[in-house]
Amino acid sequence: VATETKFVLAPVEASAPAPEPEKLETAQTVTKTISVPAKSSINACDEEAAEPLDGQGVSKGRLPNELDTEKALAACRQAVADFPEVPRFVFQLGRAELAAKNIEGALALFNKAAGLGHLRAINQLGYMYQRGIGVKQDIATANAMFKRAAEKGDVFAMLTYGRNLTHGRGVKQ
Image (cartoon, rainbow, N blue to C red; front, side, top):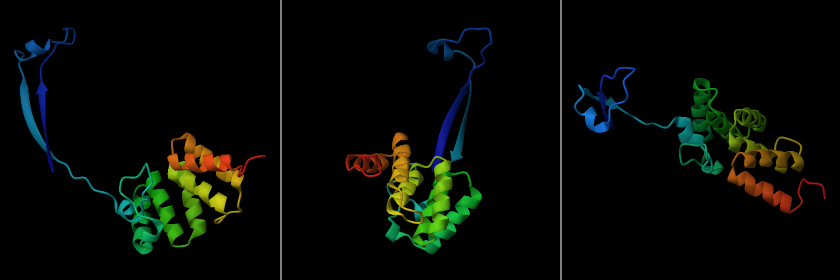
């Protein structure tokens, strides 16, 4: 894919008012057209381990049972090595570790991604606390996670947090 951009440069004195558009045509102009090749690509980690419901994601994603753990782990480990501060890659590596049944590793990665501001990681931590996956079940902590993600705009956290409040789960009665 090539993109063509046209730049028009018109000399203007610093103290002079900006020329009116119809008068700009009479000013001395220099026109140069440049072509810049543009190639978009999606990181292999995004292809292999993105979550379909991730509002911060860039690909269609895969459901947990669709992950090829070997490919996802390899791709996401490389992505995190190359871009350690990109929360999306840290979260997706956590998903791959969870799919590989490395609960402790997944929790550490979800915590890191949550600290970097990844909403689905925060929601995932809430889910793990709600279900007691790799941690002692704690609905109040789960609600705190859901509330945190909900306040930042995660609609799935809003739903889960709202359901828990409606049904009195993890709140004082």
